[in-house]
Image 1 (cartoon, rainbow, N blue to C red):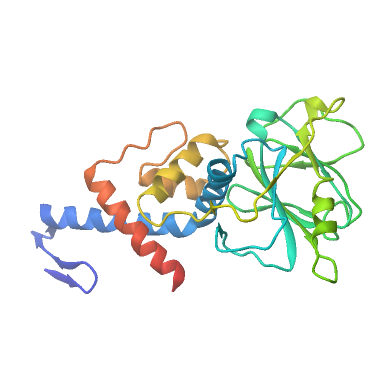
Image 2: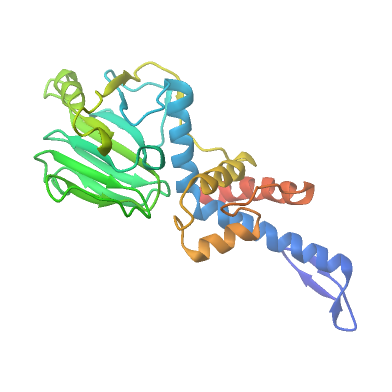
Length: 279
């Protein structure tokens, strides 16, 4: 018999684990995999929840709709790391539906463009290709092999179909947001296919509106993650992450249908994994 501080008693007969011990070890293995899957994919769950929150709470279903906080932040906007010194504008591109997508960035902006695992795709501002002067960025979906314009754009490939666009404009010295909001309104986002007659950007004032972008920390974490994996390009994540997720039943092109045992284990993995993330 082997006694583990974390697993308990492990019994063996003729040097082979008993059936009860085998079940206990597999439960522990899947629990540990679930915890690691949670910790490694918090960024993906966060992106998924952010996009779903914009859709559900603000009605932002198109990349040409831009959420802008024209007033101050308050407790109705549940975001992970906002501040009140700048005016934010954000949306999500959908390269699967729209194909290559143009983002016309105004001068004087700061911002970032991340994929659905919150990996950097591009910067906006002095650290970006526009160098703070503004310009046209063209975001290209994974696996795209069509024609692209030979000039006039900063061409930026994305490893995922979903792309998070976040911009910040500085308030005036007196704290006024009027000029910053006006700068956000100059942003244009539209499919490259509409280059000759691009759609206008619709600004949605998010101030004072209920918005929940925080990812869940229960079993829904894994259902959200499975939905994101299903939506995204098969090569959006590396082979090691694919293997880890496949071990708990999440794989591109396959339904996520955990049985009662795995549902119980993943529910506990989310609870413990969320605590580990705070440790």
